[in-house]
Picture 1 (cartoon, rainbow, N blue to C red):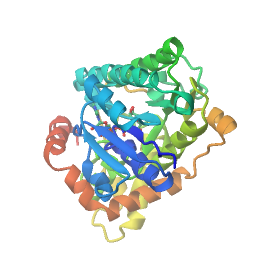
Picture 2: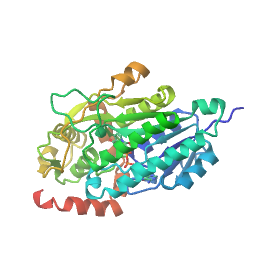
Picture 3: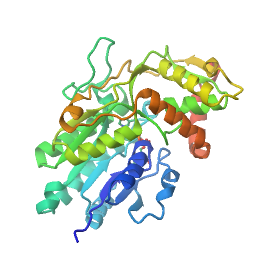
Picture 4: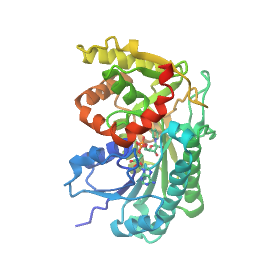
Length: 362
Ligand code: NAD
């Protein structure tokens, strides 16, 4: 019997990574090795249901640790690496960019170096099938004006935040490792995700958790920044599709064709909460909306042209913004303990410190 090779996932305890790990275990037959440093953004509780699953192994470690990466690859001999691990929160990258450069650039370099050394030891089918899948963002393309066409795979890179710049650098490294050394890479640049297990620091979960407690809903600037939203489970299915059938060396834009202003998103969330929590003392929830000082360098609009992945690989999102957002609100209502665990401790101190300065404006 041929042995089923695992995949090595990095950052699998974060928002998208944990959704991906759960989705993979449910839909595929191969095991998952999850390498995660468990920064404030990594939450092992999300994957508690896999604790005794023989197809799941958690490794607590740093992608910047080249020796650990080499050892893991040698020991587990994965068929693919799916690289999610990153410092990912734009606000934090403005306050402290060092960690972003370290993990997103040096960490990706260490993984690429390890992956290439491992790839070179492979032979035959194992070598042919090996893939390094880099998960990236549309923020590397910069910002769009209202009349501009959406980002496509040939759009020049123009990152504006330290986060986006560090992700852009990692994308370039991945590209170079394919072109220079022949590492079989795949890359996906995805728009804003939302869904279960999203940290309450990001727009959608922040608004849900604040609204449920009757706290102000802080909207940056005029709230007219446009984002293109994708339900996280659709992102997971896109990654599985690209990993299985994508052309080596190619990049694919992933998006949901759901452009909305931040204010539209918050208003729609308030309407959903009015409906789903009819006894709330804070109805109508839109009364909680407060406009606060804009983020420095805030990109005005992102929009993704995802026609290539649909045309070439047949992938399309399953959820509309309306159905995905409803599922998300329902999930947060049914999983309040998860949010309470996340909002305690280190995370709580961070949010108090960083939203504290805006309290006067709220
Ligand atoms: P996240 O911040 O929720 O999770 C990141 C995970 O990486 C955490 O579990 C953290 O502990 C881990 N990690 C951080 N530094 C590490 C290190 N040095 N070594 C090992 N593990 C480390 O991020 P996310 O929102 O799930 O995003 C995952 C990936 O998808 C990122 O690469 C991000 O750039 C990309 N992406 C995110 C979005 C989005 O909307 N969230 C959209 C497009 C692309």
